[in-house]
Image (cartoon, rainbow, N blue to C red; front, side, top):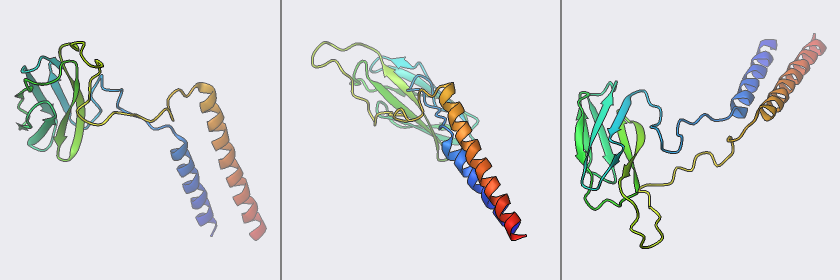
Length: 174
């Protein structure tokens, strides 16, 4: 019976620590690709409308990697070989497009920028080809040492209190 209580305390403590830990995000807003078990590149990362880019994927166990974007036709990379894609001639200058590499269902993305500047007509803003990368909404951003220390102290206090209560109950039942 005591082992079940100890296991329960350990499980609840682990869950509390896991839920209190800030979420690590590999996405830094599009300046570098996200982290995957395989490597991938788009070269160059900035291209003129109608230009070509070289696509490459490495260390994918599957012999076929599918690459897609809203600015060029889908491409398949066979057995780690690179391929080229032609950017749409009518691609909006200054816009950024997401390029997705799919290796056996695991997807990695990076950003491809179309060279050029706004012509000055309209608002001068660009429209992304897919949804906005919103991140965490500021929930985990900006944590400082004091906040982390206070949170750790609260978790340690909760864990200590749980252990104390479990030992006290175990002593009462003996």
